[in-house]
Image 1 (tube, chains in turn purple, red):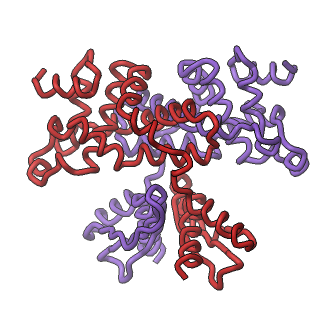
Image 2 (cartoon, one colour):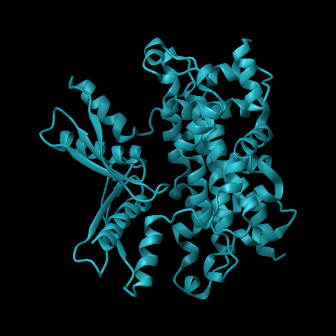
Image 3 (cartoon, chains in turn yellow, blue):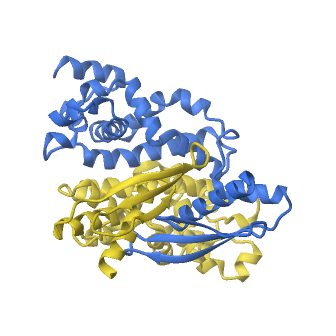
Length: 225
Length: 225
């Protein structure tokens, strides 16, 4: 094992029984047919669970909507690329020459993906307990700092609360169209608000997401004038 | 504990050390302030991880895109409500009188949410291993049956492959607008395809989802004429 991998493991707070797991996680697809995308798929679901479970335990009074918003704030791509920077993951990445020359080591998406892959690798090497220990330590300050009352509300909730405050009737959402193959459907939704002269439209890969976009547009019309 | 809870546990294949966990999971929000929505939040992340891990192990050759499509097919709301029906979860639900009278026991969304909450309850009661055993057994046939080559491609992949087959240039995606609060941004994206006289538009709560909708519309124009 190279020195740089030994130093990275010290920063991660985890020593691999089989360093090949870590090496796979650090190998970008620009290196050839064997790369870290499968580990990224696995790691993505792990970090989602570990952060959800930590928030569930830590904020025993928070309702589902707040927990969802807190998790979204903690595990979005930007948080993961910041974590990768703190852990200096970029230095250890294995990139093809094109990516290396174009600054791939510093690119947010590559860093966030590799961070997820490293989490997948820790799972294969040491199981879920090892993941919970590592992720808990990396996100310790963030888990304390994320204030459930300061996390911004999603557009549907914000629209509902705005209309209630102004004593208007609540909005209704109508699915106008569903297209695409069965497991990849695209939704087009209208949001109907009595207080607005026009309906707003949103699309998305789930009905809920399409409604959020339509609600966001209604909110802008109501607030922005 | 009532007979109906004992029978449900036999169907689940899991006996709770503390049946209060199961009772919470079966309590819909129409029953009052203490209900199953927090457990649903927890269970959602668990079923996502358990199915991702099972697919990762079972389909060692499948690439990330295929794994993602297979998981989406297995854990979407409809699969969870079908599972809840097979396990006859509806009979044991605790609903407020309004929901009971309007047929809430048979409603897909209530069943899928309760299914996730039961998974969250099994985690609190018996840990991740218990969840993996249960979910593995419930989805056993589905995990075997889901054929990575038959899962339909997402619209962006399908569009790219269609254009390549027809020897047209690849599409480009342009973010036209980003609105909404920092952690709940709505994206509006254009898909530009040389072979089409018009651009198509999609919106979504992530850039990727907005691109999928725009790609789906381009594909329909190209194929449907």
